[in-house]
Length: 323
Image 1 (spheres, rainbow, N blue to C red):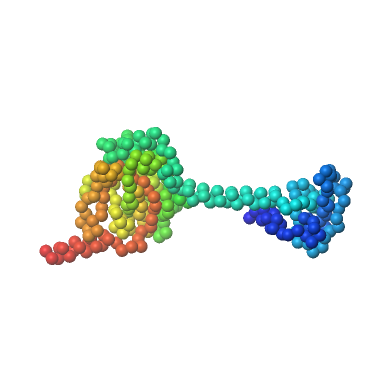
Image 2: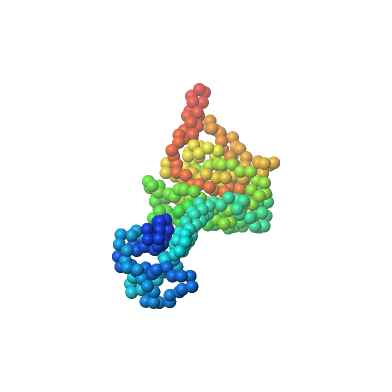
């Protein structure tokens, strides 16, 4: 704010009309001395050598050019001729506005730059070609030597405005599931994760939004290390739901639900993502084979919506009663 005041003042001065005396310069405060406009061939090198006007009482502003200077604590300026007034002040004002606009644009785009703004490096194009291959499940296994290819990519991914890993007090609050614990917000992808996303799209992958319920204490490791596969009822992989409401059943009040972009090749979707039969009315559970095709986008707080898992339990009870 302090730095912007001279710029705003210059802009205001530039908008005022000339004084009634036909002079571009007027004194804003008593005690200011102004030099009369000199002929073009005349140049004063010392203020004492130039005639000065007495202070002008009641005038509104001071217009000076870049030759303004201070003499004995008083402002002395050479009046500008013609229509150009305080060009230096206007220039500063324009530069200031430009910097504000550029900064705002940078803040809006730095978190998740569009894929077409990132030229994927050859090594990430090669990694995209490996997605869904015979080593897919091994990349999701923490004890596998291939796991490193995932953690290196996602290292640095975090929630916008939050640290890469929670402080010890915050982490303990997450462990004990204290009210208000947890980090939520949009996900800022690491450079590697952004490159991988760009490479997947450049390779012709399609993608869709899915949800995964988790716990607050695991979010940091999931974001910065990538997903691990689990061995569930329907096989090994990463379990996701099509709806936010159903994902709540795997989180709980105050716990996180990750909104994910899952990528697959349209000509062989089951290689990357396949639907599994689920004993609920909503029946929207999918199994992902490779952590390379799971890109986190947002961490959301549970649970503002009706839990779909309660419908599943209700349906099971009704079916059992009929039997």
